Image 1 (cartoon, rainbow, N blue to C red):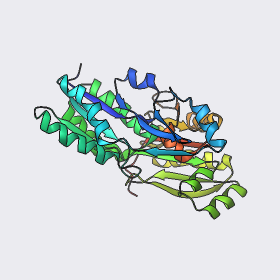
Image 2 (cartoon, helix red, strand yellow):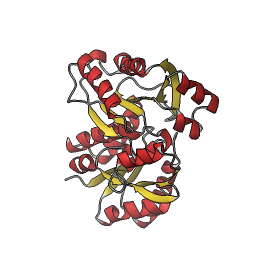
Image 3 (tube, rainbow, N blue to C red):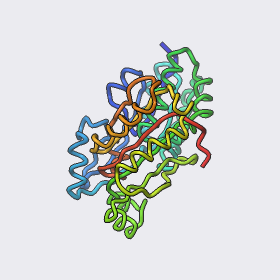
Image 4 (cartoon, rainbow, N blue to C red):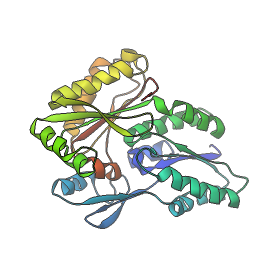
Length: 295
């Protein structure tokens, strides 16, 4: 049993069972659906299919970041138990939650001066953030202490790749990620943009690709070019999707046919309600370890 806890936000988009099995603690983000606030609790309160159907039917969604008081309330019981804390936050390129966590850390360090609290900006999102957490759990279980683990996270977080595409630009337009004109033309021409998360943790459109079949091939091609050991990649691969499991399965099948040495079968998760509020249905995201992200 380690003398510290490893934690993150629910936006790491793993299942409740996965978090529990790996002993990763998590704090809920929250969102609004048609003016009613819900916790982003991994599909427990609002099943993912129901959430994405509501969006498709025109429901209005809004998200709000976890505030410092919530972090204080989440962290304090662990400190009272005599545990130190290593917490990774959703990318600062997407949200201000890293600042909220640090405000809580500063307050609690005065109250518990004998305890150590590390807050790391993951520069990651969705199940890429989750795959980073899963690796940290491996290292912790292998005996790595909190100081070394924090350093490893900082040194290696930019090796986590995120490549994702959407077959429906509606919600990217709504959220201001894509212009209305581009969105209209994109949907008319069957264009599926391929985006990634930059080295600053921001969502960046990289390519415009016509047809879903071609964007699936292009997504896997990026993994061929960037994955650690290229086609000999022997790490884990996670995919998350927003109500388009068949598209996610097509990506997973193609990866498993091209990468014979994977550590395990590709894990397919759902994009949670916080991140899904911005993507809407129809998004598939691929995550793997590779070369350090430089742009």
